[in-house]
Length: 188
Image 1 (cartoon, rainbow, N blue to C red):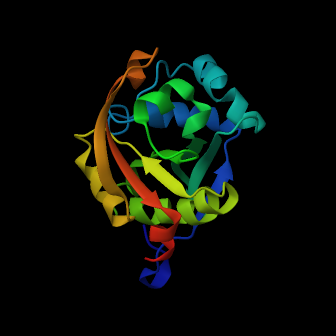
Image 2: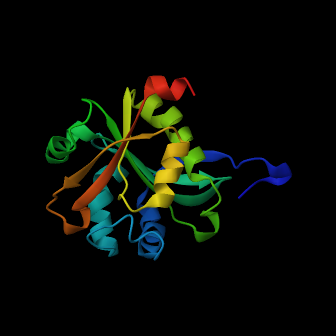
Image 3: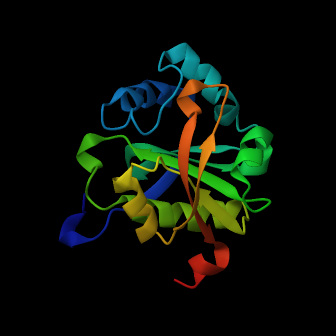
């Protein structure tokens, strides 16, 4: 997606709202998203419960709708890994590191090379900006090569692959842990 004259789209992040759950459900059920961003249930009530704290702005996790040129395009979240003790124990990353999860939900906005630009904007505005993190972590499935390429383009480097056991089967499996520091980001 490009605006007039071949310019890249304007990237913005809008706080997740309850009204977004219908489109979030559609995106999570999309066959191009579902294998990589698994959830226990895409039923609206389950999503309402899963995202309730984020919608209310409670807790350390921050959830947003990605907007490209003012159009809702996907979902992104930043979360302090230490706020999730079992996950933090298994990940063993820098204290205070902020994890990122995202997907481009709108089919017409995928495969256009926008992922790395979205991630860089999120790092600048939210992770290293509002959240004040020194380290960002992103951990896709090891076979999600499309995402890994986008994360590398955004400046992340592979650190290790870990096996995460979670009470939710949807969140159990190997993660390809990638890391970027604030200093590395600012030096790009």
